[in-house]
Image 1 (cartoon, rainbow, N blue to C red):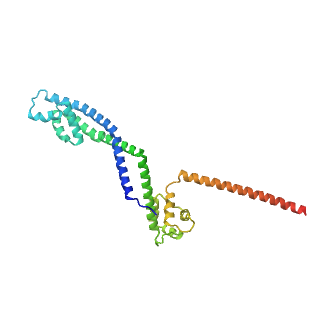
Image 2: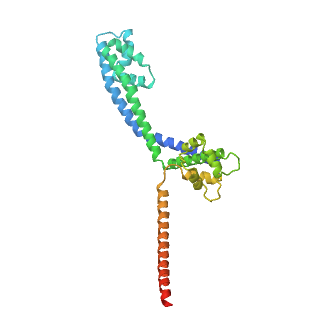
Image 3: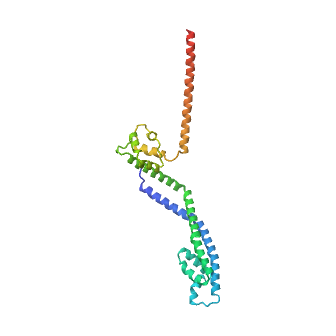
Amino acid sequence: HLVRGSPNSKYTRLLRSLKTLVQSVLHTLQQLVWAIILLIMITYLFGIAFTSVCSSYLGHRLAAKEYHSLGWFWGDILSSMFTLFMTITGGLSWEDAYTPLKEASMAGGSLYMFYIAFSYFALLNVMTAVFCQSAVENAQRDQELILQNALAEKDSHMKAIGSLFDRLDEDGTGTLSILELEDVMRDDNVLALLRMLDLEVVDVWSFFKILDSDGGLEIDPQEFVEGCHRLKGTARSFDLAKLMREHAVLHKKLNDFMEFVEDRLIGLTSSMRGGPQGC
């Protein structure tokens, strides 16, 4: 029977998940620093170009009201960098900064559109991918989390097998006979469920014998769950090593027995040949 987890174990799993999240966030701080440096460099380079466009356009013009927005967004390098940062982080609509820049220079407006496309479709996506990859690598190195996921996967698999046994036990006796198993194995839905559990049944009789560990010709829930769990997936190295060891022991016993029988036959043959001569 499967044992349900206690409330304390649930809280422990939640705390472990929180710990993993905190560790992953802290692990991405280094990538965050480099991302900020890269963003400053990019906004600085583009800021120089846009500030130059603004300065050339306003060089011989008075600070009239219609030129106020252009100077506000692109009047100096710091203002340009701040505008570029705000337009890709949601603090400012890029159209508000684009309109006065386009009126000052079509080349400047086109360069600004390129900056928007480059930032949205390349820069930010790459940064997000780097952060995600870093967090995933940190989670993969967390041995405690790996153990927790393995136990959770095993528990889920055992519960799924237990539910499958309840479905196969149509008469509700709590056991499965070979006739019952052969009958339910004709159902395509049952075969599909077994495949979902990574179990491929080719021979029902062999499958039954493997599950019937005590040889009682009936399979109880514990035998079914444990047997199906052992059969999950491909053969493991431990199972192959165990099988090879048992085969070697059996082979040695068989050789010893054959040598013993051969010696006895030789002795028996010699005694039979010597018997009549003695008479």
